[in-house]
Image (cartoon, rainbow, N blue to C red; front, side, top):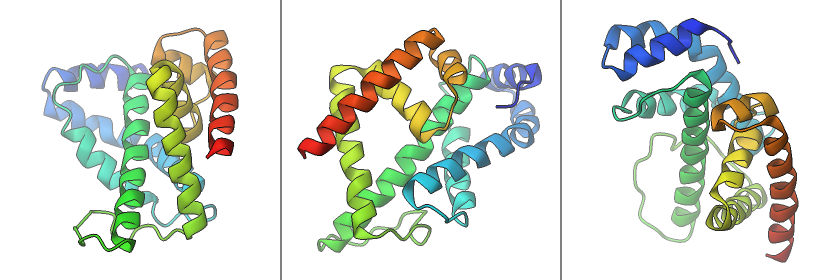
Length: 187
C-alpha cells in the first residue's frame, strides 16, 4: 500500500467536506484500488483482468458517496474500499444466480462484467455464506478474512486498518481459515 502521509491528510480534508482534496486524492489511490480490484477479480475468476476497471468504477461511485465517514487514515480507506468491492462482486453473483432461476432482469452496473462458471459461482457463494456465519459469531474475525483474503492486505496492513496487533491478526486469520473450511465442508 502506498505509504504517503499526503493520502491520510487528503482523506481527512475530504472528510471535512473539501472536494478539492478528493480530486487530488483519487490519482494517489487509483493504483492501490486497481490492485485490490484485480485481487478480487482473480479470486472470482483467475486469469481475467478485463473487469478490473468496472469494479473500480463501481467502488469509486460508492466511495465518493460516503459523506458520513470520518476517514482515519489510508488503511481505513482501503479497508472500506476492499469491503465495497467484495459486496459489489457478491451482489452481482447473487443477482446473476437469481436471474438464472427465473427472477426478473434488473439493471446492475456490472451486468456484462463477469461471467462465471456455475461451479465457481457456487464456491464463492458458499464462502460468502460461511463468512456470514462467521460474522454472526465473531464480526472481528470476519473483517480479518475480508481484508486479508478479498482485499489482499498484508498482516501489517490489516492490523493497521483494524487497529489491532499483528499477532492478533495472525491468530484470527488462522482461526477463521480453519472455521470457514469446516463450515464449507459441512455444506
